[in-house]
Image (cartoon, rainbow, N blue to C red; front, side):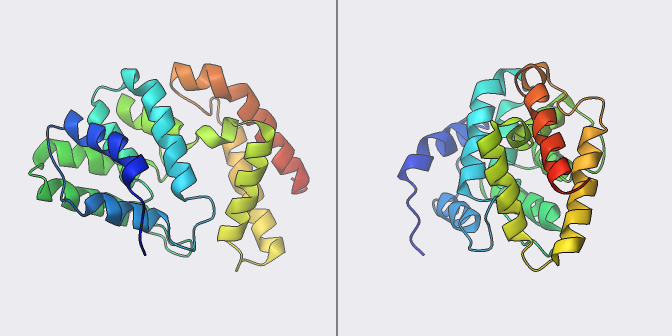
Length: 210
């Protein structure tokens, strides 16, 4: 599969420049090819672009902007809807790419930890992890039509799940988000997205009968 990389090259180069490193020449094509796989309906190049745009707007909040940017590029680089280790596989890929570029040690460890934070199974431990999670979840606070498209795309990714089971499990996920004191931890994300996200989630939950 031929992947057009030109439009993606500036942010890719910026990311690695922030880390004072240069990746393998074939790496961008491999990353974009992974994000373009046919099983993806939400976790695709559109999600990657949205996350990169959020990072661009919010990068001033990062302690290590290059590491957060790299985590954005790789956080869903491996995505199989029926798998349970996508984040770990993605994090391991990022570490391999960094090693090929001459980066390791604490930098690689932090990037790996950032990507693992997108499992959303525990509170983020660092400001950079909190920023990455807010970036990853920004779609929850999108305008209602975009949120509806996201919700439908997620259903497509889980098309093999029977409708009744999906509705029950999806309602549990949405309810979990709504029960948080704050959906977004960083001030920029909270101020911009929190209210709309709660409206979106409540409407989606109601549609599921939750």
